[in-house]
Image (cartoon, rainbow, N blue to C red; front, top):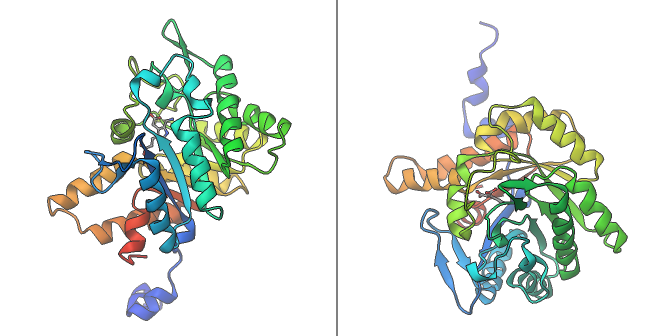
Length: 323
Ligand code: PBG
């Protein structure tokens, strides 16, 4: 045998020397849930260790993350039921919880990267990502709402706008609205290939944002499709996206790789709530080694081609020095 691949695995030093993929704090984006009120911190039942924070506690949480070198945050609001309506008007009301949160975070931590979620579902009385008429999710009418929401986020100080709605044409529409209003420097991280996944369940618990009827299959992608992700990614790139995102991550590593091989843009992946919940549930039962499972997951997502990873594990891996 001239070739013995095991020689490159014979010691820790050599294993590290030949390691192809690394995860660092700079690659991580931490999703954070916000609720109204003062001094609130409520744990999401299906996501042990993940909380909904009122703005004051959100600022404390962000400060402790930044001390660990975690500087990018994706914010999601839990909106009271009585503030929801068919057109998600709460999403661009100047004094809304979400816009106040963006302003407070940027005021206190100007160097943090604030990513904002553009989609109607947390504010929609129908629990859908678009305007509903006779049970149909309207596309072009929804773009108008998304444009208003994105503009409000930019005016409040968002660094990156992340449309997660999957309406056709929304990246170009939002880019135009931002540019026409002088926000040429605000980036767009598009949820390009977002699948109609079972793994969003815990997130919808966190925000109380589940659809009130039906499912999201007329706008989110069929998990059986790979080539279709290229259509979505190419459109978003042409329409002006700065990042292309794949979501969820673990069941879609092939899609991350495919998009990576077909673009020069940075690719992001969202390691979603259900993926987090699976690991935590198994760890609680003593069925998985937490550190090894989490670092393997994050490394695999990087290996598949993701530059940035949105993950609920972001803070704990740094706190525990697992990277
Ligand atoms: C909604 C949105 C969802 C997530 C991010 N933005 C859920 C959905 O589409 O129903 C899921 C994130 C997660 O599960 O962690 N626009």
